[in-house]
Image (cartoon, rainbow, N blue to C red; front, side):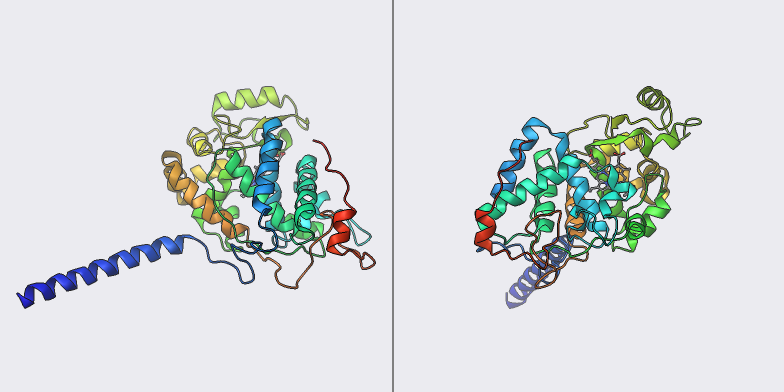
Length: 353
Ligand code: HEM
């Protein structure tokens, strides 16, 4: 009898261990929070923050869902260059041309910058100058995903805005070009701590949005890239009849405005737009990941969320580093004396879209 109950209790202990281990496994899925950031950062200083952003973006997207893609890409371009410090938002200055004027950023949507600045005004009107432009950009990207049909998730907050933008060379070195192959992508993203699953998941951002012909025309001219589906090629040649047009096309032909896993189905059908997309299916190291995401949207969403939380914490400024900008496109000048209350009174009206 005593032996039996001893056995039962050790089985129960073993089961408990198994459950704990599997829970730890799940926990390990969520990336660690960077020192200085937290999920409750604005709980007392701006409890309405996330509601303000979500509601305003819902209004924006009701009239143009395409803006969601612009905001998602903006956050990516912010984080990959010098970390998520809002540096991509800065205008150029006497110190040189801004990140904005580097080639990959020329196709960021002008409206995305307007939307971020409008969000900043709304947020600072409600909470004074407590929330950084970098955090607003990160939340806007998250809401772009959610409001396009993607997964909902929390992101750690508390980023501060950088004082300087990166040089053109640093910007170019950190944003992979669309003609990069998988080897280049894996190597360059590994430097930022991303594994191959992260790389494939992040590329799934291309499930929404558009691209200009110039970003993929090297796959159309002088002749079809043999890894591209013939019908897809024919259609793209109609959109881009010659080199160097300003025309655009959707990136995910199956569901261009919905955040889903169809991008991976496109790749399996050789209908990926960029070399950097299509080669993920050609390369044996990433092909299986593409296939898994194509057949299991939940799996894609889980991995996308993890990779986005990682990305959103790249080299963040926290604590007393940097500043909280009073205007997202300009660092606060030394001569700018703004008290939170003054900033509120001094406010301009929210620009219309
Ligand atoms: C992995 C390397 C990546 C490369 C080489 C790349 C390249 C590009 C290029 C060339 C464009 C089109 C620009 C144009 O012609 O207008 C684009 C658009 C876009 N990218 Fe990426 N990208 C990458 C990763 C990402 C990531 C990580 C995200 C977000 C998670 C992302 C989100 C987007 C979105 C949403 C658009 C559409 C923007 C719009 O419609 O305005 N991309 N990307």
